[in-house]
Amino acid sequence: MRINYVASATLPTEWGVFSIHGFEDLVAGKEHIALSMGDLQGDEPVLCRVHSECLTGDALFSLRCDCGPQLQFAMEQIADAGRGLILYLRQEGRGIGLLNKIKAYSLQDQGADTVEANEQLGFLADGREYEICQPMLEHFGVHKLRLMTNNPRKVAALESIGIDVVQRLPIQTGLNRHNESYLAAKVSKLGHILHGNW
Image 1 (tube, rainbow, N blue to C red):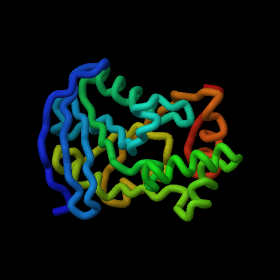
Image 2 (tube, helix red, strand yellow):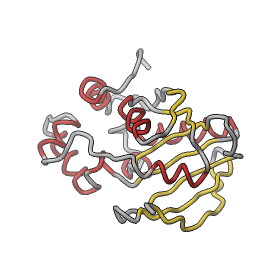
Image 3 (tube, rainbow, N blue to C red):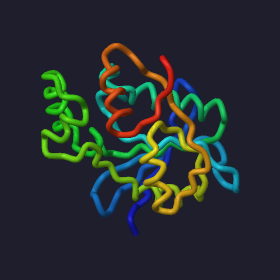
Image 4 (cartoon, rainbow, N blue to C red):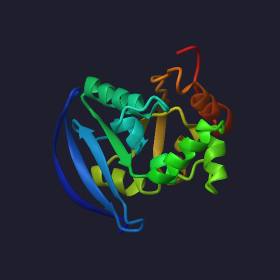
């Protein structure tokens, strides 16, 4: 077994009352959570966000990225729909960890872009893994997703482990003067899809 389900509880938020669920990754030794709302059973595809932890963006409101606004947008969309799921994965800095992400920020302050900074530290541009999503989704009985993401590689990674992504929904939010070059690098070097002067 890849994961161990630990516990669930209610989580009141600005957008509505979610349920929060805790999981242990028995292979990687990490802790992950999921937020759910509504009845996820049945054949209808589930509105979903697979979100990698970003302490600086999600909790400290950093303007260097668009992570916090993306998470909040996903929570709002799910609350509006009354049904959906967020898988919150503990893989900070596209897999390099929090302290290495701060090192990468330092390199970006000196002129590197987000991809170059990770690579200069000896890491992949994007080292995130999504295998843990399959047993987490299985726990909820979810097999079909309407996935909120700008990242086609995430869609491909999920489909490669047997998850049916029936629709990709863009999340175009969080653009500001501090993250324009960061987002440009995600488009040009990581294949993210963004359109217009949003």
